[in-house]
Amino acid sequence: MASHILAIDQGTTGTTVMVLDSKLNVLSKVNQEFPQIYPRPGWVEHDPDAIWKTVEAVVPQALQKAGIDGGAIAGIGITNQRETTVVWRRRDGSPVHNAIVWQCRRTTEFCQGLRDEGLTDLFRSKTGLVLDPYFSGTKVRWILDHVDGARAAADQGDLAFGTIDSFLVWRLSGGDTHVTDVSNASRTLLMDLNSLAWDDELLGHIGVPRSMLPEIRSSSEIYGRTRGLSVLPDGIPIAGMAGDQQAALFGQVCFHPGEAKCTYGTGAFLLMNTGDRPVPSTHGLLTTVGWKVGDQVDYALEGSAFIAGAAVQWLRDGLGIIQSASEIEALARTVSDSGGVTFVPALTGLGAPHWRAGARGIITGLDRGVTRGHLARATLEGIALQNTDVLRAMEADSGVKLKALKVDGGAAANDLLMQLQADLLNVPIVRPQMLETTALGAGLLAGLATGVWDNKEEARDAWRMDRRFEPNMDAAERDERLARWTSAVERA
Image (cartoon, rainbow, N blue to C red; front, side):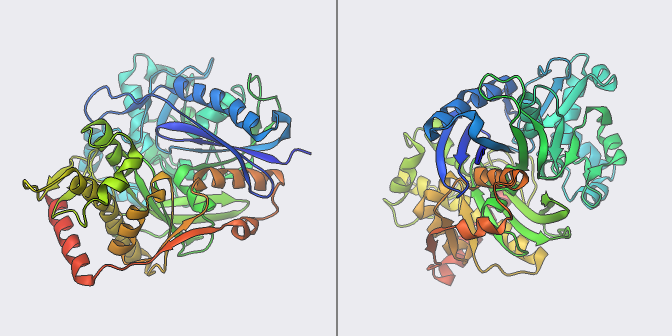
């Protein structure tokens, strides 16, 4: 009997495929990057076919590394960069334009127009989101407005829209299945949070035809089966799906209200489980769907910083201060503090709780004594300070004082960053042994749908801590750094 799960984690810079066994052991993990496309300042695109080629490349490698063939796979789970938008032709699955990435700011003016029409409260009340270029609905509108013939083709039902989860399911199923799950749909500005359905009023304001939209499904069920692939046999259930941050919350076993996590990837994403009801935010956060499993829906509060690990990449690629991202911790440890330097990494605008699309990065406190080490440390502090703003807003909205924050993602392996995060948040940071919780969450959702696991509490039993970082910064020092940060953010 097939008892392994194939988890596809399609991220902003690359695709990771993991194979899990029924004991939640990771038998293999393979990653492949793909190119980033920057047509103009503030614009970010991906080639959907390049994304698909990474999936085709790493799936057989992951199977070979795990020592199994496709027949051993009980189900496929997918997690994805959430708001990245693809529009493709139904007849052959070919994209009409590059994918517009969640980081892209090209719809800033359109969002401002919606705000000027007085629609902010409508969208906030129905979707839990703010009118920002971050979300996928306005990206669809841009493609319809700027690709020759796209609007007419969409009106005729010839085009399909999806976030990356939908696009991958379409390709995996040979074009048989056009679906998304509630967590991804909740990031479009097009779905009502309470009904979990596409909303005609919202569709009308943004200008997206209903005919383009995928069917909204739960996060754990059999959506379709593989067909016509060179890398997998036909008939494997595609059975779990969640946006990357919701999948990480699930993989961190934050199943109860008040439990929270932060994922450090290209950006930084904090989510808190709020239970079976959406909690409206009055502090600049997002209200979103966590997941739906069976008949149970879990909602979450979310705050996102657009730039986290990407700031380290900028030090490497843009400034040449480091040769590899892993060098930043050692370089930052060459100094005891940032030397008064504050870096606000608003390289693509500011996300929660500020929501200033036009903000740009700023470095303050420079003098002739500043070294590469100070800049490296200020970068790590900037990542942690962004998250401090988000967590304070999260506590205010939820009325819950966090006892600890679980962390994951690549940068969570940086001990200095984790200690700085604990110090600046004044909350213990708990790091699991397995940092790939995004893929784990997708795998768990697929395994629940296919009977590999009976219930989600089996995941809680398997979760293991690696290290706990306790706050040890003096309160006066913390307050001084927070004050410098607040001043710098106002100038960004």
